[in-house]
Length: 334
Ligand code: UD1
Image (cartoon, rainbow, N blue to C red):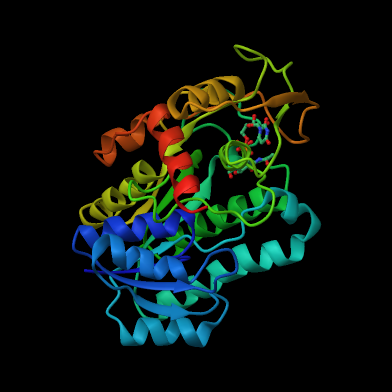
């Protein structure tokens, strides 16, 4: 079975590709290296001993997408390709909406023309805004996103809902990711953001690696167990595995649209993250309490029972594994 993976060299895309290849799927990949490195292709090959049929280019390029669908007998598409920096999205809304929404419209147009109607789309827990309740179920109200990145995911979800009503041959899964962290066991691939990281785990790794002096803990007066923000961190390989289960689900379920939260269901505070990282890696993480970051919320963690049940998927890795694997990737790629 051939799977078309957009953003195949990115953080989530690359880890998912290794599992797809290991499970015997053929992978057709697309990436424009806007936030990834070409060397990831060799690393995927090193891990799996298999090649991706790779195309370099942009998802806004309809001719290229048409060529990919014409030359390859694609069964299912996994769409990871998107910009994901919250801060950047506030500064560059046009680029974000173009890249994250127009590109999906281009993809869907090409899919429809080539009669490829199975899609897994990467969305985010960010669509819940400040959630009505925790743990967050898929029925929790979406909206009130606080930045163009989040809104681009919200808009795309709406487009996919409308499409599944208009063209009932489509089978679509929307995955709402919580906070993916960690790296492949080989330490060949992992999270490798350019510049100063915006997210917690990559920032902790840079402090551990002495590239940054200390971590700023954004606020210690939240309404949480210790005052610092609580999130649902999920190991990247568990997240990747959910996509394999998603493909299986699309193969044996009715047409329509399915939405799943992907998290562990457990919330950890920033201080708990620091403590666990220090303990498993035997390293000190200096930190300072800093003002709250604008747009941050108290707590965000998933109720993932729907995915557990309907996809037959459960998380295999715990917080210790996440902290160990994230740091191993950094020290082995110094
Ligand atoms: C952030 C984004 C969210 C996006 C998600 C996935 C914001 C406001 N939200 O979510 O839209 O979907 O990443 O990538 O940017 N923290 C620190 N110090 C740091 C970095 C983070 O204390 O240097 C804290 C944050 O305040 C938060 C927690 O760590 O409480 C996790 O932060 P982060 O990794 O950025 O993830 P989210 O805030 O969940």
